[in-house]
Amino acid sequence: MLSKQMLYNLENSSAIRQMFIEGQELAARVGAENVYDFSLGNPAAPVPEAFTQALLDIIQTEDSLTLHGYMNNAGYPEVRQAVADSLNRRFGLSLGMENIIMTNGAAGAINIVFKAILDVEDDVVVFRPYFGEYRSYVSNWHGRCVEVDPLLPSFQPDLEDFERKIDERTKAVILNNPVNPTGVVYSAETLESIARILERKQAEYRHEIYLLVDEPYRELAYDGVDVPYVTKFYGNTFVIYSFSKTLSVPGERIGYVVVPPAMADWENMANAVTVANRVCGFINAPSLLQKAVARCLDEKCDIGFYDRNRRLLYDALTGMGFQCVRPEGAFYLFVRSPEENEKQFVARAKKHNLILVSGSTFSMPGYVRLAYCVKTDMIQRSLPAFEDLAREYNLIP
Image 1 (cartoon, rainbow, N blue to C red):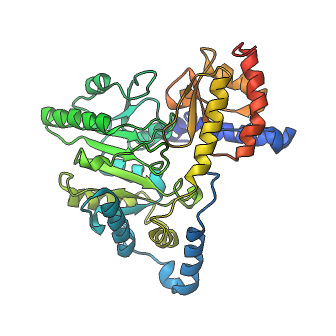
Image 2 (image 1 turned 45 degrees about the horizontal axis):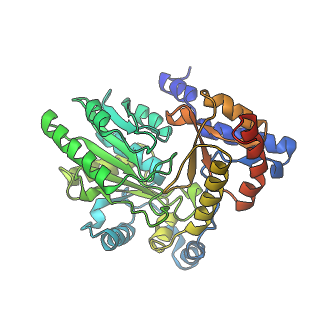
Image 3 (image 1 turned 90 degrees about the vertical axis):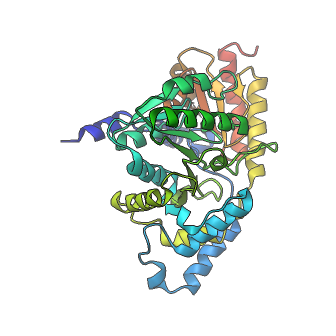
């Protein structure tokens, strides 16, 4: 018999993955070249050559038994120090290796932080729209998601609603910056306001409220938009990072957590997150990948590739009459559905071989998400299908 938790997970299984599978099935029937799959945020920019060379060099030069052996659950000391040094140099911080825990990507990082801080029925505040897997991560540790509404059309958080939603049961707040699915970047002013609210609420309820900042898209910001480093605004902040998008290696599952020295009882917390890495079954982040990313901390994928796709798709769809949120970061376009039930819009798009993701997946019905981390020629080939779809809704003659 399945557990109640697994039944919940099955009922709330990722719609994004399901759409990706449906796209593969459609491609098998009509040909991959005739399917325009915008479902999955799977990076298409080339992996930096430096990363590939780092892997080869490490394999060829290091002792294999040592390289592939166990290490501290927090990761290799020299790797953690390299990450700390990079962050200190880039953002003016004062981190040591003891503030860094290497993880199995951002998903692993979020789960071990929740393991360390959540008790049964603690509340975790999330900002709509948000990455739907947050619901599963919170439920893994028997917490509850509390949703904050956005301000429209900016999709910045409604800070008055945020303040109302925090009460004595609130243990944590999680935000994604830049945001999946909108591509919006929360400004320094917004983040400072969030920090001041949290400080007031901590004082009122006399317990820590932790902020988790999920930053896999940090390096993907356009037009000179700044992505602020949140530990400068609020001490009780965990920074979650993944190399999946920066280096185009999502399948490698490598990232880290920052537990800053400004956090209350940070040494005990860093130890708790490290132990959570072990007891959750991750044990440690992959050894080879740790050493490789330590050599590539200044490397990035071709951001210009995503920027060209962003401009092409946004300009084309808005020119057809679709209403879109102009993305400032990440690689997603959030489009308002021409009909109230966006799931019907998704179904109609599929008839044109367009694979889109329903906004309900992100707790934002009435919209759909397109991932433009795809080959540029696929976007170009998809435009006639979008034009036909727009005509069906009388958006263009």
